[in-house]
Image (tube, rainbow, N blue to C red; front, side, top):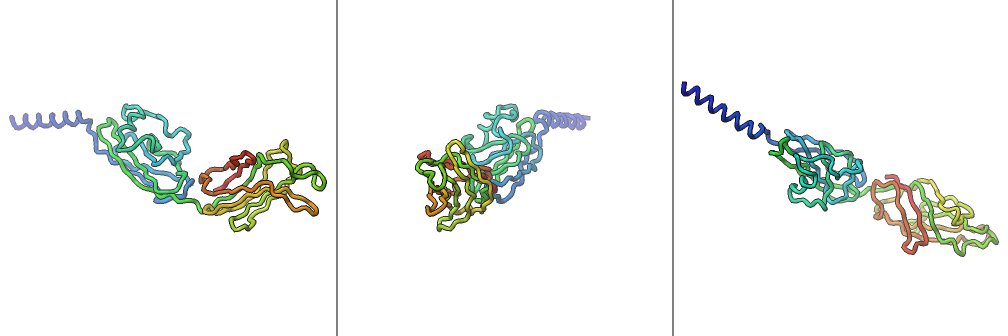
Length: 266
């Protein structure tokens, strides 16, 4: 009888301990992501964690972008703590150096810049007593090329072009895209009699360019007859200025004499 009583007491102790600890199973953080992507290329990460209730994702070096406009705001408390307090408890990270996402799976994401990026998933049990984290690295490559799909000329120096003797009162503007060896890759159509009042002027076209190379974009006033075409502006267009995945880029001279926007397709 005493043995049965002792066994019953032992069972009660075990049950009590299980109740006090909340019967919490060990949390195992795990996720999947591509080994490499191109900068600006959207990709998904998939959460395969076990026995977890809430999650915080860390994306390294502030070049991560989500399709959600407010991905790093306090969508929800984590284990009863505020979003910022939860971040304070992460392993050795600085809130200034990382982007964050709270939730099961982030929206489609991409990195703006090339390099090796670190992704960390922090997983927590429902009562917050158990936690785990998983770290993976993803190689982000520069794109090999991009395509300029349009050019909108917003501002250019209008002085001293076309006296009206041969070609009209205002310049007839076209532009060339030229590589660093001087080869003309693209010549636009000519827009006649452009004045400061008719700007902006937009050309739609398609010209593929090498991301690893730089180019000149040169604007001319086309002169008919014996006069040669006058160059109005010559701009060095560096691919490294572009953010992969962006749909446009604004080029503006520090002197303020010229400004144009190119449309981009990656």
